[in-house]
Image 1 (cartoon, one colour):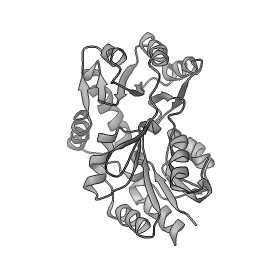
Image 2 (cartoon, helix red, strand yellow):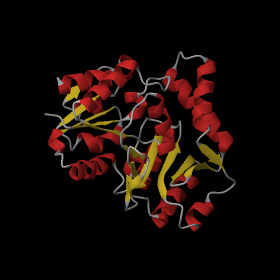
Image 3 (cartoon, one colour):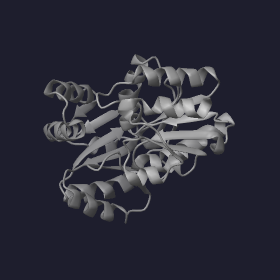
Image 4 (spheres, helix red, strand yellow):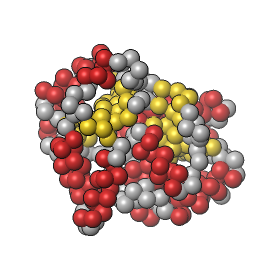
Length: 283
């Protein structure tokens, strides 16, 4: 019997248009009505996640920034696992030396020291992901995301001020060889967890800030076993959940490696695969 369902957002709960289908909404609410604990587990920051969930009428806890922060259904921070700043500086030097675009996910928002480059990168990233989508929709999604990113001349203040907890560094590059080289260098740094939510990025968290670790703690606090938990996702930052739960479900749009790590494969995010996975588990 499944008592908890953890759901990734991008490429999983969300369509390519960053929407939550009616089928997914209905299935989530049906699971909750049956007493199943539903938790969102995303690489997004809390503000980036919650506005979409509110639009869909979904009220549940949220594991944010790959597990760096956990929020209650009311939006209260119930746990956080920031990246140690001295370790983050070592990682940032590797990224800076390779001239890779970086975003800083913090307890006070997301920051970039190169907004124009970020816009260019995100337009290319969105166009690559969505292929045939209209230019107007790309601009809409871009504007949606840039609403959550603050442009600054320098990110030094994040490291200097104690009230800024650094949750994640998001590195973006469209050069696979460059990204692979940087990843190998970052692996030499102790105290970080490396993952990705797409082939064009690297996500750098503290070693304790992983979706699977956060989900483990969350379920224990609820008195739920991981064997009674289902995780649904599509990418490498979901692996730490898949490796722990009793029912791991890959989206139909996940790559073959991700699918091979799971017990089941559902339909794609465009086909409301989350809903199918939930109905299969609770019926």
